[in-house]
Amino acid sequence: MLSEKEKRWVLMGGGIVGCLLYLFLVLYPLYSFQEKTQKRIQRGWRVGKQLEMGLRQYKSVNDTTRLLIRRAKGADKKIAPGRQLKSLVNRIAGKAEIRRQPEWEGPGVTLVRYFLKMRVSPVQVFDLIQRIDHHYLPMRVVTWTYQTAETGRGTLSMEIVSLERGTAS
Image (cartoon, rainbow, N blue to C red; front, side, top):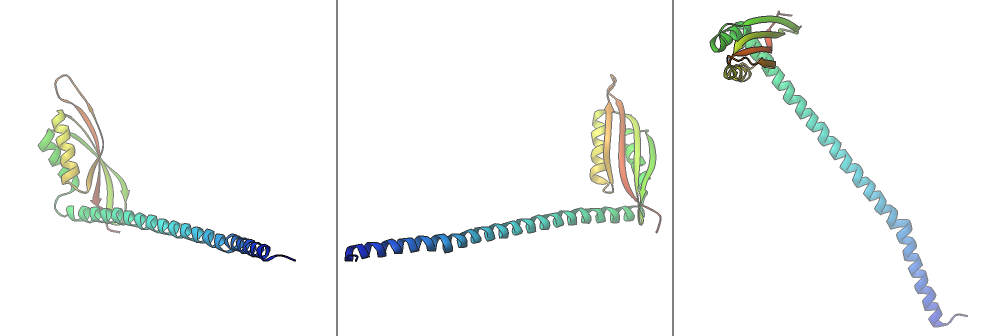
């Protein structure tokens, strides 16, 4: 029927076809499965890192808030923040109109807004903002507007938010 040479060609062709079928039916699906699994693992690690980073950010904000509340409660034992602010403004800028408005009350802490209006020089504006933001931790300058005048002293309107010890709950 077939000569030795033809049998060898058929056997080699069958071997090649068998290898190709093995590659196509066994190795290629294994390789695809391995890629999909690797992508799932990488996605899982990425989600884990995002969750960890979000938790770390939440913890840092929570710790900062807890520190502010603790300092606000402790600061009221010495001098009330309203009196501190009035003293600071009088030292830097002289006489000022200060209006106090409570915003929110929590367990032992009150969020208060102070509205200032005064006539100051530009140097005094930056000195006041820097002193409030850097030296009075439970107090922050939220907004300020400065309208210049020809005399070198303009009108400053400033909004300050402060955490103060509130009523015991």
